[in-house]
Length: 234
Image 1 (cartoon, rainbow, N blue to C red):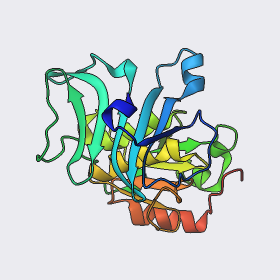
Image 2: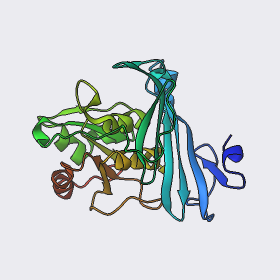
Image 3: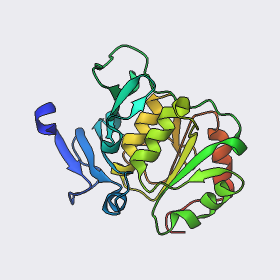
């Protein structure tokens, strides 16, 4: 499929053993099944996602959630396909809709400004993430969830206030580039902010430990990260 869309462009995936990052100037980074254990357990929180990277910058990303197909969202029917292109915003495809190039995105992050009232998701190694210092701090007196699938958590942040309860931030740790780059770009194009724990930009070489937020809460989350250093495997 990707060879037809972008002939000659390298396709790498989580299922392919290869050096990261690729030496090519442009390539696809694909996660065929994100949330493998969820799918195996019969839980609906899984999907496919990927990012098109050019000159070390994500230019396009997508997330497909098969269990969101035909879901009613207001007067529309979701196709479960989220996508973003650089400078054009983030979108959720609806039945009979077309790719809206040149218009502002229909996905917008939340406007929640109170960290104590925010819904924050945490993702990463299922063995260690819930017990890491920053995760434990975030869970104190705050609404939190660990969904076990980056694809779902990332799209919840990008949806912002479109859901009955907004998801305002995602803290992700110890993951592979296939797990973080697609959703980082989706959230960024939806008006959010994504950095590492030190406030540095995410990239194909800086993808393991990230804070993805609505932007308003970002500085407070970074301050928490400085007090409670989050390292994969803590």
